[in-house]
Image 1 (cartoon, rainbow, N blue to C red):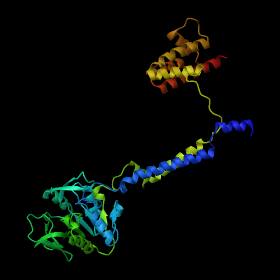
Image 2 (image 1 turned 120 degrees about the vertical axis):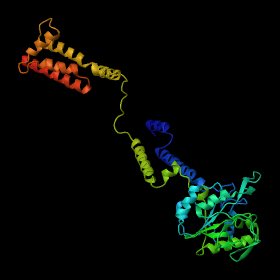
Image 3 (image 1 turned 90 degrees about the vertical axis):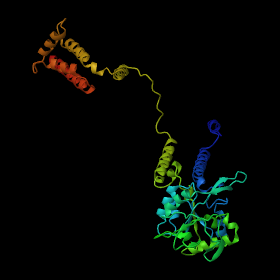
Image 4 (image 1 turned 180 degrees about the vertical axis):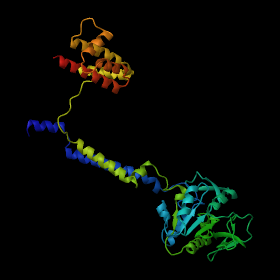
Length: 401
């Protein structure tokens, strides 16, 4: 190995190929971390309670989802608007803190599709001793439940307690839940007495409303009869056999968009790829140098031109350009007199008349151009007037020679 090769090896401990693959691996890892951190919240299983199909609290529906999985096919979870357009039966579980706009979106997308809406019933508080559990406080006021019910159908909760002790749920007899919720309906799908519906169908739609969630939530499924009735209820509402789908968008899962998602999803995905491609090309372009490196320039240049440019910049920044026309005219008069041989001592208007007499083709030619320079207020006007004065002097000087 020669001395020069050894010096290069000491100066570059890593080869260019090693550096390239190291940078490539770092960029790949950064891109993977960015994508995972962007979409991780959508697929993270929440540990809190609530009336969601992932909640294991008493008012949750994780038990029904697991029950359907054990007795048939595992239910799907709707996390986006595209998921909501499925032909499967969609179970929408409503909680008091759900998003009203998300419910309106579900109703719009589910037109003509089988959908079961489960109303809320209980006000709860988190039970801090058990993560994901909740403690029942009281039944929700009717005005709160009616607000959600009115967004789906023109109906209100009925007042008063029912006298029946048992309900017929698709052929399965179950005990009436505590403080049963019902609506008035002459043709109920599940009746709690004459004209009292626990399951009702929305007119002119394939929407079903279960007024009392205690028939299918986790607290209700501890009763074997209700667990069997829950399966029969789902089978009764399905148009065809197959899995059902639970909605998660109503609870804010999968519907929150941020800048990171906009960058990696259509229609802005094309822009992101274009920017990355441009950055890659710029990086490749910067790997090699084209031509010798440019020498550093002085902050303040030498020479007459640098002095003139600096003076012009200062005058422009000071706002004094409009005052230069008459001063330039005075200098042009003295210069023209000196070049054309004016008698010594002539000044002012006397010098102007002498200069005008040098022009045989245009009477008062110099004075006219001088007045134009005095009246100039803008940079363009002063440039035109100065050019005319210079041309006049050069022409007269040429005639003299």
